[in-house]
Image (cartoon, rainbow, N blue to C red; front, side, top):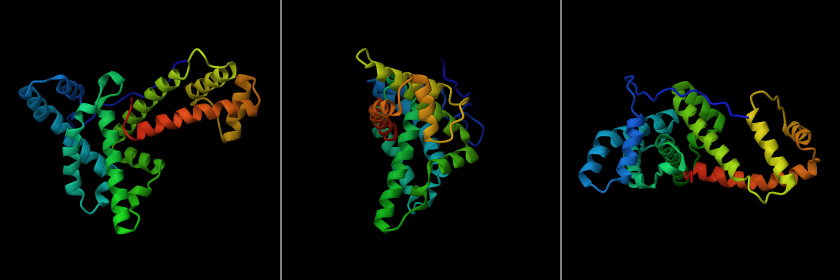
Length: 237
């Protein structure tokens, strides 16, 4: 079964112009593949720097990082920092440059919030935002970022799940893995109200009892947690 995808709208700035297009994606790839200082400078000045500048500013306002007391300095520091990790982006790993750099930019500012919170011995509101509140702000101010990041996450998650399907899987492991694929691919059509309902579905699909499902599911939870940590840290390898 194929997974449904959400149509992506083009990334636009306040003026309506596109600021992180395929041309900017290509410029980053060319920058990393080039050994010519002149070409790299032109690519950075004409494409990469403007896209990074606007991306950082929009993430700061979308996620309310403006609460940081030194936000103007941090914005400039983040933009400079992004230039130092340009070579870490690898197109061959399947992720888009926009998704890669927007995720690690968001996490960089979250780290700054936590650091400021420790220094002042008080909690900063932004560091307490739940995923639901973050998505609410994304939808309110600019849902394009949320749509594109979500699609990138699901694309990489499916690739991760496919990598679990190895020849030496035990029969019960393969049954549970196939059940996971079915439930995820049909998530929009299945009414699941709690964890018990998930196990009921999996019992029907696999023919296994709950204990057998839990034992095999725990192995895959470990793999998923490792994947999620890498995603949160911007490492999509």
